[in-house]
Amino acid sequence: MKKENRFDKRKAETKAKIFKAAVELFLEQGYEITTIEQIVEKADVAKGTFFLHFPTKKAVIFYLGEQRVALMEEMLIEKLKTIKSARKKIFSLLNVLAEVNEENKEITGLITKEIFKELFSEMNPEKENQMQLKMMLVKILVDGQQQGEFHRDFNPVHAADIIISIYFYTLFQWLDGWLSKPLAEEFSDRVKIIMAGIAFTCNSTV
Image 1 (cartoon, one colour):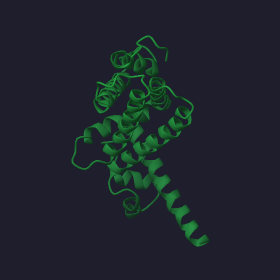
Image 2 (cartoon, one colour):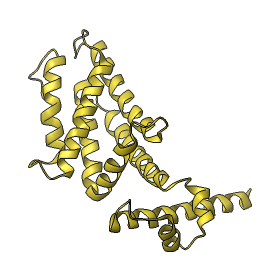
Image 3 (cartoon, helix red, strand yellow):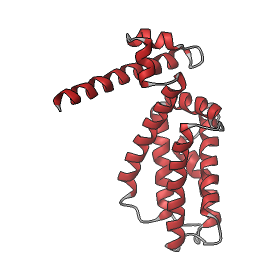
Image 4 (cartoon, one colour):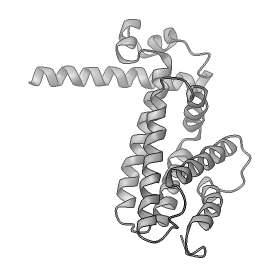
């Protein structure tokens, strides 16, 4: 059993080393320019070792996205478990997204721009991450309808799609330097417009 644990540990350490080298190169010189040969040289591993952990260079970006989603989910579970209001849950969710994105703007730009190039492909692991966020929003919106916070005459799936669209459009504006306010405030200002349309009381505090 100990031997298996040591093997798993070495395997995880090797993957982490490759991942770290790849991300550093992506940030230093750009994703497109970086080659697998440069990554394995920097990580000091064989090319075959790279493919044991990542089938393609793009898989490194997807893995980075998965880590971001896992971090966000961990933060959200902690924050949302004490909040009863569906409206407040949505704004807390957006605050967490803003916090994670603002923590490392370069990483956010790398993930967002590269992932969006692939988002509409037939088979894309990132679609799964987007669906997790969407389903989380749908659940909060449905809970809000059942609790009497929101009207029942709107489709929560459509509302979740609108909020996600606002999130990504605002994120792109922020990455390009178009926004003057902090990211969390920009998210809040835009989503308040949606809340005013679906909530029974438009003047409730966040």
